[in-house]
Length: 277
Length: 277
Image 1 (cartoon, one colour):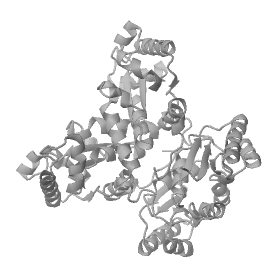
Image 2: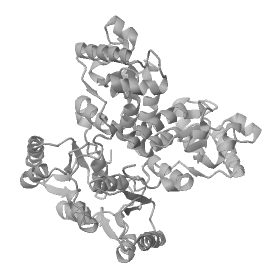
Image 3: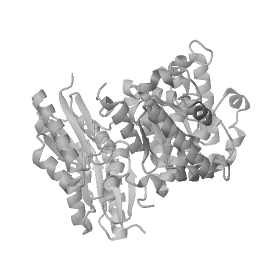
């Protein structure tokens, strides 16, 4: 049973505002119901959103909480004047001090992603996703030198989701490469990785957790056995240590946290993006 | 040449704050340099961040802009007292009115993603990514009934990046299925899609843009020719119209916008997430 309804209202997708609002609500010991109302870019849609919000408040007998990221002044006016709820204007709150600091007027541009689909940044991002998919799980050695980052680690240590996240969020071309028993027998990194050693980053994982994950895929296999997982993880860590490859354990980390650490270690200059190219 | 340095400082990854700060800065006609300082979760690291921020301000002779999402009061105190710059506290600003409205104290929990890696939500998200990769580009008919959404459209209309984004951001299992000349000859949807018609959503694309995209892959091929692209797009749109499948054009839309529209049409109840399961 939720204890409060939280609306996120935006003239764009509202995805960023929803993530932010969700993180804020996680600071409180309640179970919110979060409702995102995207693409509110006309006065008509603003009135419609207001009706939805006010109706919810009446039915539940509790003030809805409303996070808004709206830039059109006419739309903002409708919400401000008619919305019954705790309104938190995530744009307006910060735009005014920024205008003062910069000595500039804001442009009231709607939506971060408007018309972005043909921008250089966006096309790079699409290219990065394609590259990353084609270079998942050591599928090809071709153009490994074109990678921004190459993740290595035993099978099911979290390489694929991390690679895709880095491509999707940061437009990075990420290859990933499994470390397999043949590599452990040779006691050396796969030869294809030698020329790009500086781009390597390793993921390791707690053997018990690895065994749990592998057992979901191939129950009771040698591959999934705790004994084998222990062996593979120990061999992989020893190999990365010998080769001087930095790594982290993915066991208790989200892909956002893993990705941020990879950036810090391999591409610290990418811990910030340049707007407008 | 950038005209202002913008710092994003967080005790977590700071990725949400960076996205939000970037969107705010896009309201101004300047070229900011954005620097993210993640994992600032101790007083020592706070002092280190302050030194970096103040040094940047001195070198550039301009007040840095600082977006912060910090919850540890000791860390916040260091930043508030020592940071020379326009400080915008994205957490504190909204936590106080929320405390008043809810009649609760916030818990000062650090980081949205802490210890999330074994939560049900996170495991669902990983499973969704695996499902989506396995069902990319019509690779398998197996377990199509397990999909939350199935995207259809001609080759290179944007299905794969949209599917991965829906899986990554919303934990949805998304299959995608290309519409190919054989389908057009039969004038019918692929038979495997008939039982799941309610989960279908179509992507279409401007033929000229499709031809440009395909030409990057296979220059001067029949596949990429404008004439063929026109034919395929017309056939695909006619087929979706006959089958009563809703669709949108991906031509001028970002994957965030496409994904939000897919949710609105196919899974409107997913336009909001329930925290804590």
